[in-house]
Image 1 (cartoon, rainbow, N blue to C red):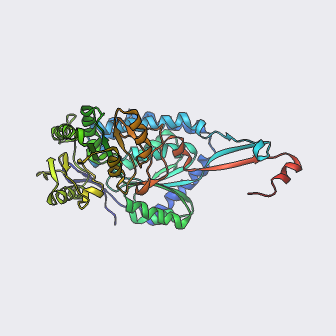
Image 2 (cartoon, rainbow, N blue to C red):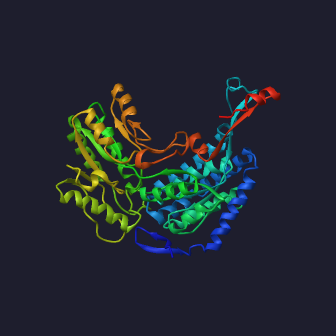
Image 3 (cartoon, helix red, strand yellow):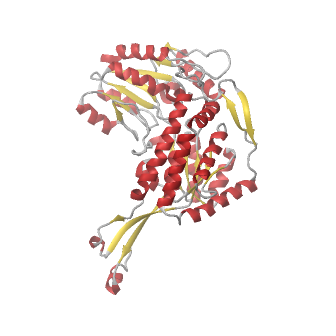
Length: 471
């Protein structure tokens, strides 16, 4: 049986366990989601907007309680958890406000296609399975759920097994906000149940945020079943600093960019690629900033970095650091495994990396930064793009010509110049290469799970005849 439980990462203590759904319970949940879809697709977008705004109001009203649950389940600081709840409420209101425009019929050139009217209509497709990770246990779900529900789809959430309380809480929020029973359902199952869910004909698509291995598995199943998928996978984001950059500001933002969410973010900057002209100054400031971060109880408002979410995750991070150090890398700060309770790991900076080391090619999912020296723009791009990932990226330069070049040359789904990579409801989010495909957020995220339907309207026999030779 899968182990579905809340385990406090500050102590390692199991606080609450859940029994996985039986096959019969899972089938009933899918049936409820399908029935709710039939109801939801017939509602007006204005009614769905009222429900979505009500969900946002509940998130705001219960922010601290929800944040406390997230911190308890996966260790993010309470301050960061509060901000995550607020961000989810903002996204819910964004889609409630913008959905009428995003879903409005889009006129086409009727004369060009010999029609009296021609337009594109966006309609829901049905039940969407969401397989979500623990690192942003509310935000990762909301950025799928808000646009999907506003479009008229229903959602089945298979969340990470270490954040069951957060998963159940969000189902309850949508129910209390007024959405029909089954419109958003958390299924407490292990990963072994995903294939069965996705193979069910009542489930029409899937979205996953997670590892490459999980993405490949979902894509394989969905390909066999001919079902749409959106995948947001890992990232090893570059953070490039050029000679014209504000080095002090870059080093300050770099610290936050690497250690946000205790270093457990797909779009956290992980590889810091610095021009030799400013390398020493940046390295000194960056390492000092990282070493000064306070590691401790995530409920303490003065804590900067809490524990990693699991002992296994911490062990993996430490193994990657030791692998580099054993092969000659220099550890500028951190790198020592703490003693005592909790799965803590110190902010760490490692330089003198070479391609033989695991950190060169692997994503490090913890507060560990790799520091690289380059001598030119072309070398910076070569190192930045020299990975199988392509999710986010950062470039620091006050040279406008370089800014334009970085915007084009960085092989990633997101390019942030002179700022930290983040996600906004207003902007599409997703990756390329092994970081996945498809887009979340913005109008594109809503339309990923819509039937983009062409409607052509003629008049009389002549018009009908003109369209006789389709395609």
